[in-house]
Image (cartoon, rainbow, N blue to C red; front, top):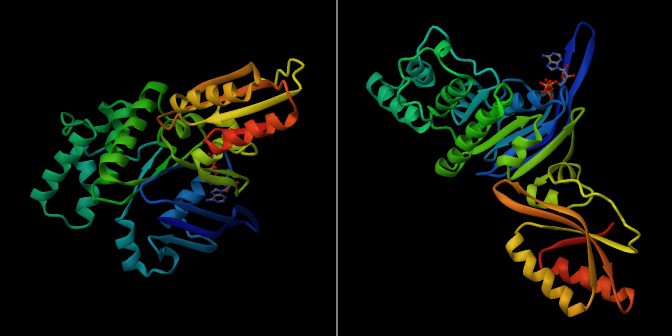
Length: 328
Ligand SMILES: Nc1ncnc2c1ncn2[C@@H]1O[C@H](COP(=O)(O)OP(=O)(O)OP(=O)(O)O)[C@@H](O)[C@H]1O
């Protein structure tokens, strides 16, 4: 688990200063794929670089499985850094070295003997789908293939954490999808915790199970996606799901329903509506894939033949049975 506590980062230069991170606190659960979203200049790169102390925070703590990285001496920090792999937007490959030799770099640094290195590199190239490219040079590869080399290199020393700095921002949509699928596979197969920073909502939507939104160096909100999506006041939740047309249509009582599993929600909804005798007008809605699940949001006009109490009871029953429902 990564726990970030009250992190500040101030860049000082030529008599002025920039507060890049302001009192950032976050928890990133072990085994999760966690997205950090924000606009350009929000502090995303600074934050991810602080996570392996490529950038030293000005204040605050970074606990990696309970150990505060900011307190470690050089040797201990080097050991902890082996537990953290990193991939970059522009891949950062060595152009004079072929693919296999690029992947071998971290193994050389930690002194793995040549024969073992070769076997590990072959295994990693298979894992990322580049088994036949060991002798190619970076200039002979597509962007997606270069990022696969970056991923293989990041995994070489068997890290438990993988930091991804805008890893798909230089790639087209199709290649982005294949790299995200690879990251998801790695998360599931190897149990790696993945932290990715991105300005693309689609990336979070595709693979993250938790996220944080950064704005001007501050965390605006953070949490599991399941929670953010069902919170009416969540900016991320609003952005991740299709916008529901407010189209009131003159309805007196309009409710918004959000649910994670359409196959479970449909029978619950129809049963409760039938029992209550409440009439429904479907105003707007949609079903979208988020983190591999199908999540739906509906706006309904509700008409009770009796009194308002029946409507309130219906909303309470929906919430009790896992459909987040509220008046809008
Ligand atoms: N080395 C540096 N020296 C001085 N200021 C910096 C430095 N790096 C970043 N900053 C400033 O810190 C703030 C946050 O920058 P950062 O690169 O972390 O944001 P970002 O969200 O990653 O943006 P982008 O998506 O454009 O990369 C910005 O105002 C930036 O100008």
